[in-house]
Amino acid sequence: MMSSHASSRGRSKLERMQESPFFTPPLELEAIKARTAELGFNMASERGIGNLLQVLAASKPGGRFLELGTGTGMATSWILSGMDDKSTLISVDNDEAVQAVAHEFLGKDPRLKLLPLDAGQFIWRQPKKSFDLIFADALIGKYVAGDDALALVAPGGFYAIDDLLPQPNWPEGHAEKVPNLLYHLSSHPKFHMMPMAWSTGIAVLVRKPPVK
Ligand SMILES: C[S@@+](CC[C@H](N)C(=O)[O-])C[C@H]1O[C@@H](n2cnc3c(N)ncnc32)[C@H](O)[C@@H]1O
Image 1 (cartoon, rainbow, N blue to C red):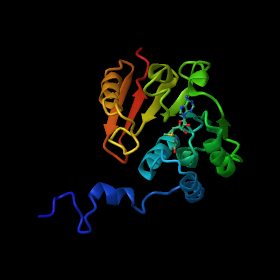
Image 2 (cartoon, rainbow, N blue to C red; image 1 turned 180 degrees about the vertical axis):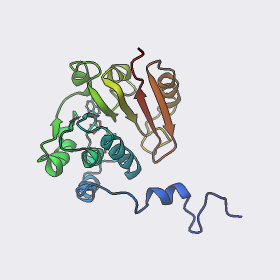
Image 3 (cartoon, protein in one colour; image 1 turned 45 degrees about the vertical axis):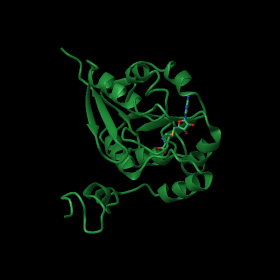
């Protein structure tokens, strides 16, 4: 008998929803995706993650956003597509070859600053509580120096991490790190966390408002 989660074509409801026509992808997405495939870059964010980031970005008019790990610019394009004219996005990557794709397709957007830098060097120079959304998509700012990245999130601001469900490109020993990270984040006194089995697995944290 077919499970209640399986469709008649063998795809789950979740898979069908993630392929859904209800998403409004950024105009540049397909071109970036094609170049990403040409490069053989296998760490790019999926649509479901991009869609959530788009929604979060749209909730912060005039927001200051940060992406740690530009890659080829997949999530960058989604975040930009949710932002208003007054918002700004900084995206950092230490691999200029992959970041060049983001430059090619998104570099003309005046709201975006693409920085060819080490994420750690960048984080440690930023004022605390200065970003309304951080997509921490590199090792640094997530598994290493995650608390330093969290310190940059403004009250009411978001910190998002993905790839929390098993992925084929995980290196050996990585699987044990994920629950440890989630335990650590869920017990942070200054944040609420919402972990979701959506797309590659994502957790969104929001900094609690200051106590009066
Ligand atoms: C998961 S990929 C990013 C994918 C991208 N955010 C997307 O949505 O498609 C991780 C990126 O982090 C970059 N990276 C790894 N270590 C880094 C570091 N120390 N500083 C800056 N970037 C780093 C890698 O070059 C890689 O492009």
